[in-house]
Image (cartoon, rainbow, N blue to C red; front, side, top):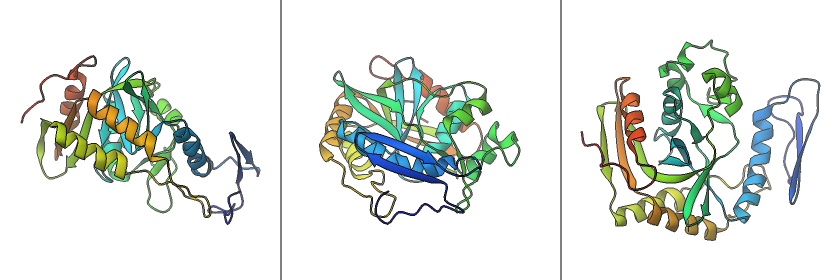
Length: 275
């Protein structure tokens, strides 16, 4: 156990995680079912450390498949709408590679994205407005007691949407600077210039790092070298767009899904839509 860590989480002791490089083992105690989100939180930081030591990057992002072997990566700050887009694109038949966290690695001169196995946290507004999740019973997923968000794994979403939602690893063919606006309508898309691309990736991929520690006594500083390698390669290999979506009406997700599908997976995307 990391020094100072507690085994208690909203009740009796449930889980102990021991970390012995290069392996991670989980021991479960108690007669009741495992509190899987808690086990996930315990495991993900040591696992992330091991992954980053191999040169990969866990990016604060979401991603959806645009064609077999190609994906669109959505970057943005907290509350930018990454989870909302993730849910709505799945609803419209697209497969996903990540929500809130996507694994990025340099592969053959390109950046490859892969789904990161973690808890998907969906707030009430996103659930209520979605035509699939909003029609489910109130107890379709466990809620976090602190913020009320639904907490589910990809496997549960597979059941809800009646299909596997996760796409296999894919090349990042386009990157989106995402923003949702609840007061307007329409879809505004603008291709970023090379200086804008570098500034955007510096802010969203290099500076906006996911937390590196959660348990008391278990923190570390990630190695910045892999992050910069992936960032530079992403700037050189993928077109980037500033996308602002007005979500005052429900039609926004159809328009965004159509734009995502129009992206060219093997070269430069189609000319950006202009409102």
